[in-house]
Length: 66
Image 1 (cartoon, rainbow, N blue to C red):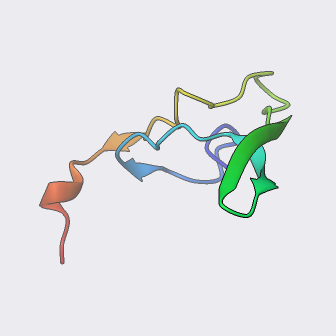
Image 2 (image 1 turned 180 degrees about the vertical axis):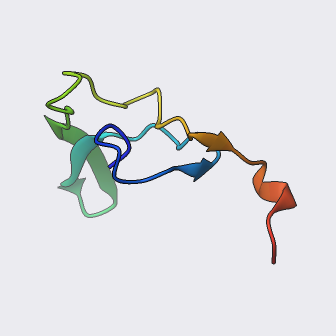
Image 3 (image 1 turned 135 degrees about the horizontal axis):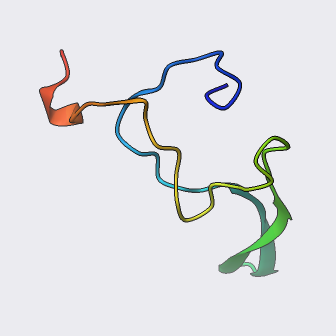
């Protein structure tokens, strides 16, 4: 939405979790999560894994209206 000019992002940079992952049960008590896909923006050719989406207007969430 941001890269196509369809939204203005207000807030803080997102966590940067951009890859698709799925849980795999190894035992009844142990689960491992393994990446199974990568999301890439077709306009930029880049993803946001580890980087996050930067807001157009930065706002500290501690200042938000509650």
